[in-house]
Image (spheres, one colour):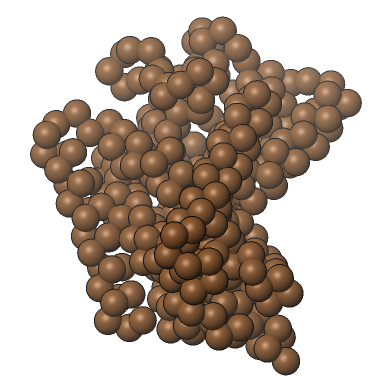
Length: 339
């Protein structure tokens, strides 16, 4: 009975986080899609999301994991399960990122902007054609497109800028190559969405599973707070996908569809996380730390760089920093006051 209740609670909570993702994506129907608005809204929101996720990782995941580990292994070895779980979570995300880079793309947005929706392959070489720019789009200042690393895709904001190629800017290909390209793009799209959102659902499920098992440091209130925090950071995530797609020429309804899709795997992760913890209770400290490691990796690798992308002034950097600190403080307050 405990397993069913925990799994059901985790499912409802992660459906809420999915719903908030859809609410963020729905702003594409309201907000203008010009580059200035996109930067003014998205960058502070992504900084806020990074603060919320960092705070949730520490206060809702790592702190309970340490408490459970101390109760089971004693103070001398309490650090070991948490350290191992955290390191494995970071390494798994790093390995998945490297796999995606080797296959030519890292995030769902680039896949949707190229192969999945165009049905063909973008032209290469960076030359301007009648239909627009091919290869890497130029920056607005006339310089080459900036990349954070080898084979790394540019940011949501950079790809959504005025220099982003339109969906029609692709060479026609034969039917067989188009079909193969679309199949590969769909597979990579599913993998990328799972990579970046599954750990969040898993964290919520693990929280509810620990509460159902009456383990030290775990409570239903903490699990609900974690779901609320993940929901808060999912709001800008949905918009960060849908708005650049809208700027690239996609209809608003379709951009919304793909924006909310980024949260669709979280209910799956929630149910699996709750079931795993209740079936194998000793893994809970490892599972909580694993989810924390995966979430911190996403913050450092994606949200913080995205929030600072294009912030050329000290004022812009401070704005994103304050947004991060506000998100961290808000989530910490919720966890302490309601947990």
